[in-house]
Image (cartoon, rainbow, N blue to C red; front, top):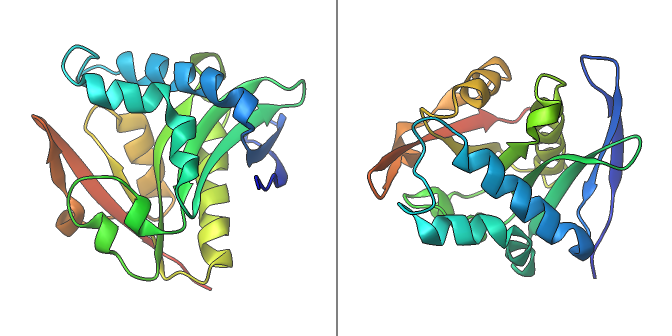
Amino acid sequence: MLKIESQTDTTMTGKVYSVRNATAAEFLEIGKLMVEVYSQLDGFPKQSDQPDYYKMLANVGELTAKSGTELLTAVSGDGVITGAVVYFSDMQNYGSGGTATREQYASGFRLLAVHPSFRGEGIGKLLTNECIRKAKEKNHFHLVIHTTKAMQTAWKMYEKMGFKRAEDLDFMQGDLPVFGFRLKLNK
């Protein structure tokens, strides 16, 4: 049964957005958003380079079939999907390379994407804060994420929010170096 929670917050621009679990009817739209966002990143592999990765992005809603996995979406006051992220309360289902799936007492998130029309509105931070809230609710000790050099805006945001580089979580995705981060959670 899909649990739909909604957290409403005001971003740094003063606009109000809610973060909630995506519905199955929204999965296709969110998948298209993810493909659009990731394919436009300078220095990030293109669909022809990593077709399986882009297939996963397009079908991101399928990840919610795994235990402890939620597709969260940020929605504007008029119901427009402005961004999304996949939250994992069970790291065994995190699905990255490297050692992240063996993390204990941890949550993680992957595949954060903000619609180009809503960049600079604080949507990424809003989605990240919801993942932090959920991890704390689970009484986890830390939150694990990964990013790449192509995602400098997100990288800087994560560091400002207190995430620290965790080289033990780094891995290679084909020819692409992927960098791990942890946020220690204060309960």
